[in-house]
Length: 99
Image (cartoon, rainbow, N blue to C red; front, side, top):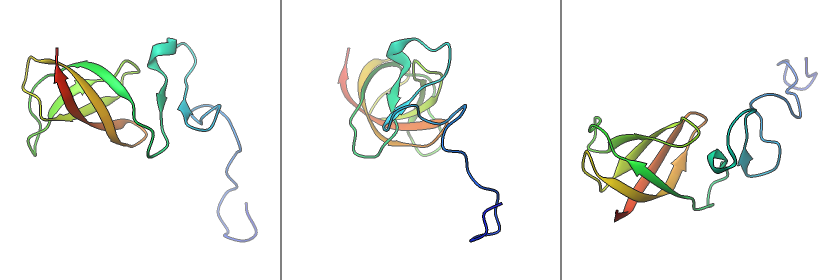
């Protein structure tokens, strides 16, 4: 436990934590599945857009398996999208080109 906060001390590295600043890696994932996790790092993904979700964005899946909510796309389209926001298991992206 940390004496300052009374909470358990956080490990500096380990499973599920970035190996390098800005990269999320997990054992067994292909190199193309590595996505930036720091805000401000633009990442383009090619996605197959699925059904619409609440709020109008459509659901897709990133190469690393995370769910992506894609704006400006229609179900069934294949798009190039730029990641605009992220969380541990979710990404939000804007479609910039229909392929």
